[in-house]
Image 1 (cartoon, rainbow, N blue to C red):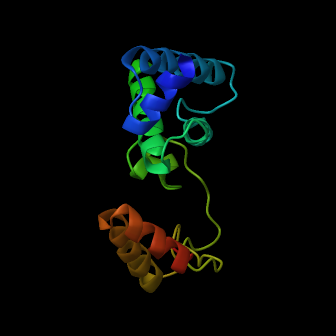
Image 2 (tube, rainbow, N blue to C red; image 1 turned 180 degrees about the horizontal axis):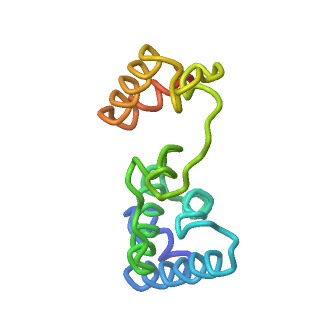
Length: 158
C-alpha cells in the first residue's frame, strides 16, 4: 500500500498533503536542532545537503529529477517559513558587509589587485582598481543567477 502510494506520488510529482506536512515538520526539527546545537551558523546551514538528500530519496522512489528538486525546494521553503528564517540580502553575503555590521577590518592590500596599499589608502590602491571593482560589482548585482555563475567562474578577480 505504501509502495503504491509513493508510486502515484512519483508519477504526479506531488506528495500527499499529510506526507508533505510530516516531512516538513521533521525538517523543521532538524534545522532547529542543528542551529541550536551550534552545528550550523545560520538556519540555512543545512539547506544544500538537505535539498540534495530529499531530491535523491525522491529520485530513488521513481521521481523525475526536476520534480524531485522542485519538491525538495518547496519542502525546505515551507520549513524555513516555519522556523521564521529570513534570507539575508545580497550585500550581507559579501565580505564588505562586516563594515556595515560594525566590525571594521584593517586592510593592508588592495581588494581588487592585492598589491600593498599605498599610504592613506584603505581599500583600493588607486582609482582604476576602485572603478573596476565597483563596475564589476554592479554587473553582478544586476545579472541573473545563470549570468552570475558564468561571470564569476570566468573572472575570479571580482
